[in-house]
Length: 271
Image (cartoon, rainbow, N blue to C red; front, side):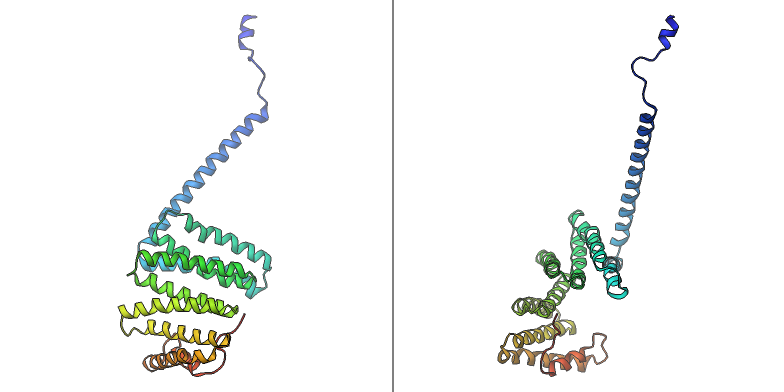
């Protein structure tokens, strides 16, 4: 009787299902930790690979932009459901652009986030989201402005800042917001003029100035101030003619800019 009493379990017997649930939870936890470790290791390796050269970094940015805009191309080119495409774009934006913002503060992460954000207005234009279209451009411009303020001699930061300002100005003009567009163009031209002082005669900075002057002329005509547009159009005409003579077969079609500067009437489509 004593032996029997000793071998009897003390307290209630554990239910068979409970021990299985514990084992399953342990397996899931271990699996999640392992997967998290693999993802972290892959992220570290990818970051090291991308950061090892400027060329790889620029390729990574281009890939990220194409990745984020994939749902847009499906909607625009293949008739994919618009609402699903918008949700997918927002998810990819959260993963890629916002993910870069959540990374440890570093100039490359900030630059990466700005470049991806600057591609998103084109997506939200397709989805008819004007507020998001403007917001993403403004966020990208603010990030680039901060980089330029902290690294005033960095050519690529200044170039991307000027380009982003100019692209946003085009977008604002197409939406009929000409005053805001002209303000952005003037900011872009100030950057281009500073770059031209650092690199006298460089065709790219002269191209940026000519494009800005032409854009301002267009907006002035649109708001009923055609009498003020003439000097801006003339500056654009002179610069673009020079560029066309110097680089007649340029991939950026600088001679097309010269023809626009010579033309009369609206220079930008509306949307």
